[in-house]
Image 1 (spheres, one colour):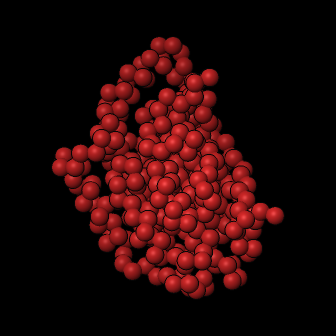
Image 2: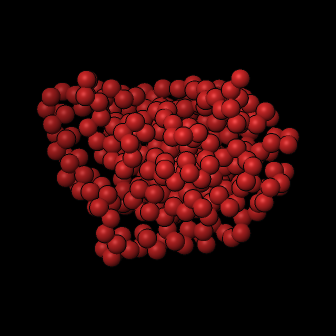
Image 3: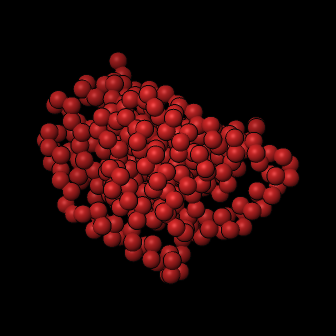
Length: 315
């Protein structure tokens, strides 16, 4: 397909597109599928979190970490591409990642306040809406409704799932007006040019990503933006001709020590790809530090972030 003025229709409903994800989730719950990263994630939640919380309280740092976690910054970024079509020059993408929105009281309201006045052409969310990796999801939805009501994006909100999410979250977010991409894509047109937006399922814990299948949904000549939960598809995405790779997952470490940096990044990729801007060949990547927290609702030397990205044509 090469016509940028045609947006490919969805070939099936969201429930059908989630079928593969649901099989993997069932295997994980039944213990039939052993994923080392997934198992270690649950171990950290059950064992490491209480120990770390107690230690931080003993040294008087826990309350400071809570305050830091409730102070998201707005990061204004400008990315230049020689290959950017002229009609997409100035296109603005609001990038939110790792909201873990039910993990802290008041976070949704604070983020909504920060979003007020930020105008974008498109808002993308790259997964992890729930704080814990298992358990109920019902507290996520009213808080997401609060946050979504503050987003001002001409082409709406598009999202993918992360390693903390259940497939039911995708269904509920679509009810709130979010377009969920499960290994698929679509085109946004400006004149004769188009931006191909591609979203894959979580490659980190669930391993449900299908980049080749998702790419089949967008025009071959589009400027391609990939949404993936983690940066771990960097090599495959670069080889596939992706122009911009947006992701999160690492929280940039969340707790960074002066002179040392992050103690835990939990991503199978070069360390330089786990925070901020990076490049592989002609592909530019950006790994968000995230809005929320996991394990504990604290941050040190690693502020939560909202990224407003402007695409510019290199002169």
